[in-house]
Length: 178
Image 1 (cartoon, helix red, strand yellow):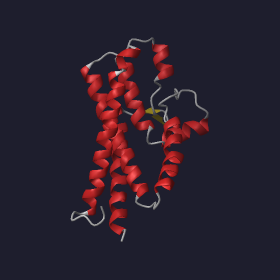
Image 2: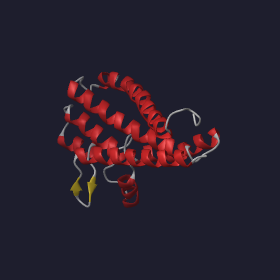
Image 3: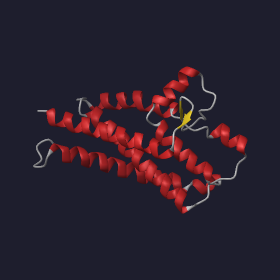
Image 4: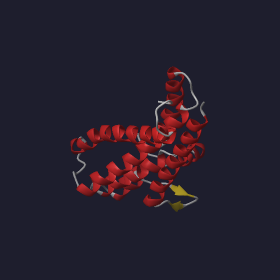
């Protein structure tokens, strides 16, 4: 790839967009299974979830390319990615509700970039299903900064900004490689 007659930035952008596309279409499989757990097939819900997972996939892929530019061995890359991405996944609230977390874990949750993609997805789903207000409050507390509830658009902007920042760093690192 490094001797291809194209700019290195084109290679990095292509890797990020290609990885995001593959990951997003893998996520479509989960979207198709939503009915199995009584989540309605509402077009607005499906489109919103797909857009958010595409944005998340782009950001995670940009992070992976940024890390890969510094690592020389494939085995090292896989270990580093597992060591970083898995804790981010568990802390984000993708599998567990984030209400009533201990203070130290709540802080980690707020600085975890995945939190800002998981929360809007959760909010979209809970807005389309019929549950009690108490269940909604327990399962979908939302992300707050010092008591202020972070809006969905700002959460998506945070994910996009981090993805673009990591893409920029990856391009810079690839251009620095001899």
